[in-house]
Length: 175
Image 1: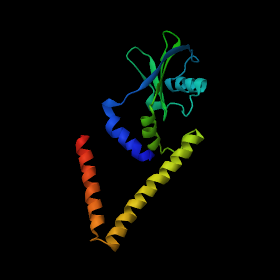
Image 2: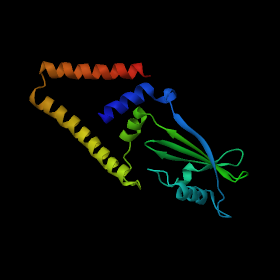
Image 3: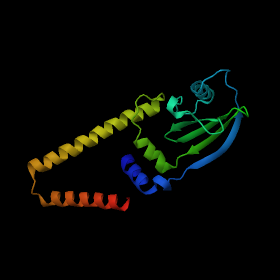
Image 4: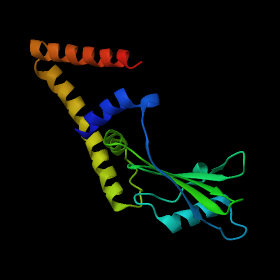
């Protein structure tokens, strides 16, 4: 059900229609150790806040804007914690953006990174990997069983044609 709901949410609510719910912006004072690199600042912010279900930001996710502010995001299946270190002001700008339930399920169904620090996310990733391989095995064995036992069975042919037609129709409607 998670895969089905996530697919429908991504199909009909995703892309430019995806809505985010901001919990507002807050500011906190922050002064990194002198001579810190951008990555060290990101790690220090991570250690200070330890947002649930997150990890330290990777180097590629840390960037500077035109004003010299350091930007980095902490992604979770619940949403994003967007942070900006404002060195001229000596503080952090923190915005928490929450996923609605549909996009929580969409993000949960794509979670396959088993190297996550949080045990709950890692356990879900293992479950997702098992589900993906099970789905592949069911599709392959189901096709084999149909072709090996009753290739001329009308109900199977109609089901195949209907499923393929529905897929093509949904593909055409979402393009």
